[in-house]
Length: 336
Image (cartoon, rainbow, N blue to C red; front, side):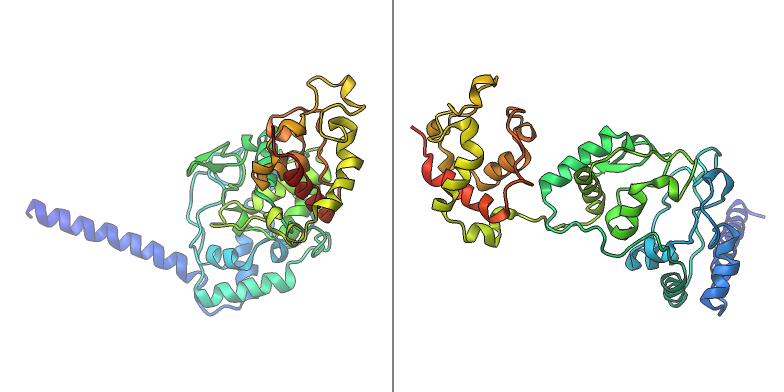
């Protein structure tokens, strides 16, 4: 037998095996079974769909008792059809060398049926709809969330993307696609206490304030979402209706105590401060971008590498008063 013939027959044999395995994987689910049967037989080989949360060290794959409230439907359908990459770079059990594997795939029709089954039957009473929202999420808040992600060592176990490249520890689930994968209601409840879902599995419980939770979840929920539209408050109706004369009262109430009534930096609080408050009377605030002024005042001096003595007034000053204040600053202080 010629060498070319041997090579051709060998290649055909290999392709036959590959095709047989692929067809076998698909046919395990694509055989007319109902969604309930698929979940109870095929899925249940690795996933639990009932019971109480257990340590990852006792499981083969993630629990799915709450799958109906955990995942966004679009992502879930793609995952069930085998169109999404594995979520755990080194396998679900980080204590074992599992490596990569191909998850079983369903037909489009079966994926829809199983997703419907999840949404109807695999629920969790602890996850309350609408209890947390990310309305009016700003780009600055997401930047704070990114810092928290690293400050609280989330970066050590979860991979994200920086400059288009994967970064972070591959121990747990990847998060660079979190924004198109998770339902916010579930993610919020998980963030309250991860141990409620995966007890004694290495999950970290962070001591977060309510604002920090917003920043962190905001950061996660934009991951993988192309063209996310951030809220720009300086373009809101409050600023369209801003009146500088009303802003003068707000300036007197909150700003004059340090910056002085005329912006000379000589307010009663200035005596004990180092560095001294900014002298608005000598600053061309009228020429400064709205977003810059807004962020410095709303989030505080330290958020813009300015004096840490400058408070973050965002939660204190009502939105319309805040807009009026910026109008007053830009109309009044035009520099020397």
